[in-house]
Length: 377
Ligand code: FE2
Image 1 (cartoon, rainbow, N blue to C red):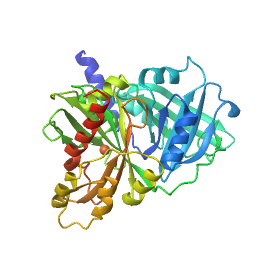
Image 2 (image 1 turned 180 degrees about the vertical axis):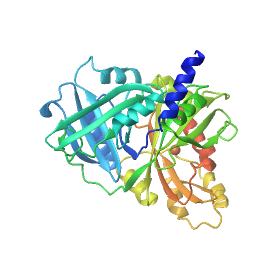
Image 3 (image 1 turned 30 degrees about the vertical axis):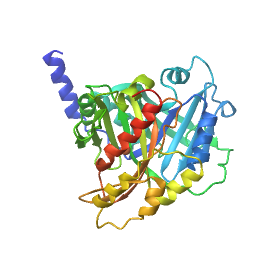
Image 4 (image 1 turned 60 degrees about the horizontal axis):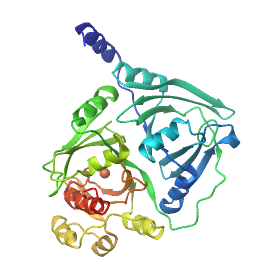
């Protein structure tokens, strides 16, 4: 790159403050069967159907279901034609996360600032309108085929966006799950690219690194990974993983092999009462990674002085960790798609701001047992 071009880019970056993100508006999944995947989120995870768009509402190429629980909102989209980009995405990646959408005050300004700061453009600013008002949106690219939409919905009063109607489906009855909000959303990137993507978020969106875990901290007998968490100093927390050299195939490599590109690995959702949440999810048929009983002997020592419902935690397989600020409880579901790619984490924070580093080894050994069962370790 010539010096003049570099200098010009630097000027542009200096002129543009990074976009201010008000939080995660929703996560969009592109899947092979939106009707079935949204029904799974409703029946197994307790999400409520909120809105729908499809041929009945004038959309000819796709159907979308909007589901909500607490402040967590999912948009589940499927293709109606074989030449659709959604069908192509599903063919390449299987079911997965296409868009982690940020809420902003001014979508065009956010896009312009992000692109001036080196963001890769995906969709230029556009406005959609109907009798309930208008939304403004634009998108940049991130790792793999994943995108970040900037969305301003402040001028819209309908159920989700123009083209959507209130959902005609009701979720099946089941125990209340109690998920409240997004905690963090994790991406897996190619080996050797972690630092590039950390730099991308810092430069383009003005994020900062929050914490880094090297392969010494995140390794088992067989495999290793490295991870850096970037965040906007508020509610948007995005850890990024890359595989590291190990004796056998890293779980991140298994993901990359099956997803066929970088992409979202897990979505961590917050609850105020993880015992009740996990009990409800188990009753609804959700399956979780398990830890051996010895985990709890070690955990009781690590958590000395913290009053915890040990019998419930052990019965349900909930993991615990502490840092200087408090403690946290967490658990990981099995993969929720056919390919061994995406899963959910359920997390309850009691002051702790970390990510369960004390559990990494137990967790990764559990993942490796599942990986071995798939013949991929
Ligand atoms: Fe996590």
